[in-house]
Length: 203
Ligand SMILES: [Zn+2]
Image 1: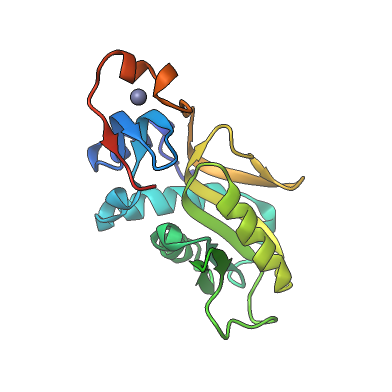
Image 2: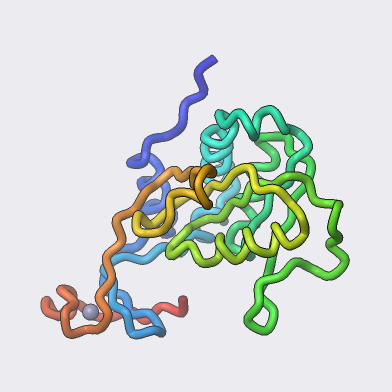
């Protein structure tokens, strides 16, 4: 049976409809300007939408032989809170055994206390959005410190200028590859030039 994965346009339609993808004139705390903004949890507040997105992502992951042959003894790992609903949805669709998520404490990404070496199955790292890829890289590092093998990576949205592979051999699977546009300041921002009102975003 062929399992269909929604097209990038379908997924962007869902993100637009739920308010997770927004167009306008946004300014980050860093001072960067951009005409687009993703607030992914807005798509995951509706259970049906969350399910469609997670099932679609799970289909991209399942075709990887290294993943399908390791199931169900794998863990799904989120770099932070944003990826937790993705991790639960993908786990459900793949019938994977474990879920973990990292959090930032005092600026450092880490797992909860008492997560031990030897307990974590080979993992797939999933997130709702990959902007620079830094969160994924940090997660790969802490996962490997625990001696865990990374066998896959997936995200709902990936900005095209972030890495499309982890290391040499693990592709970053995504439902949307987005051409992001950022201006370092207002000086060269086309929305500033057109006088569009500014919205400040928190991160
Ligand atoms: Zn601007």
